[in-house]
Length: 80
Image (cartoon, rainbow, N blue to C red; front, side):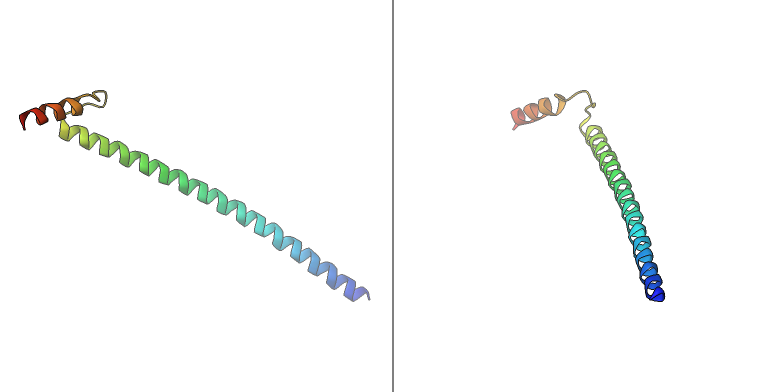
């Protein structure tokens, strides 16, 4: 009977170790996903800024000059 008890105890200990390893793997995966999401957000923000800058360069507007495109549209509609 003692060999059975030792086998059961070993099996339970192995199961607990595996569960602990799964928790650590889950935490590592969550951290990696969080870092990936932050990197993606930063890339989107950088792309948005670059697109705004390109649009401002084309229209001749400055980032603080939000009314310039509206004024340009009004002037172009008067010439039509």
